[in-house]
Image (tube, rainbow, N blue to C red; front, side, top):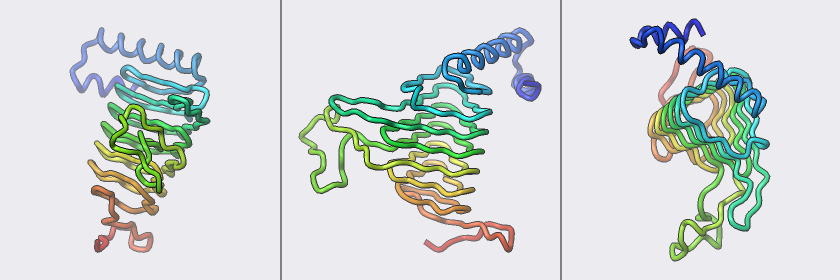
Length: 214
């Protein structure tokens, strides 16, 4: 809390604003602990949480405004048993959207930028032998459910990143801003682009990041 107050002072918040925000944060922590059983540190703005029985969040969870976490249990005539698991020391900026019909598993010490989407499903099936038809309204297309998303410990995710069904991001990886992750990103690598490609990997022997030819 002392560190947070220093930040607010640096951003020219007045004393009454500091008191109001400190009380507001305390009430939010009590609310999330009472309602969900989560040890939330900070959620600064509005949050939409759906399917709380299917969501597990570790200690020291931090997020700014407009958080949306949804464990989808049904859609039309489809029924799901989703899991969203978020480890300890998770931090995110504004407009984070996490959604699951199957499994989204996020490890410890993960840091996420603004306007990030993490989802294990799509509206419609575009990969199988019997894909969704463009003649069908997107609202009516069945949700895909066979894939999942795994994000391991110590991952950094930049602004405006989309992490889509089937993605697995390895330990210590960095995903550059505006990237779209659709498959495996190996541990200790930097990936950028659409779709995300490896551009650097960390060399433990040399203790530095080394460029990779694409």
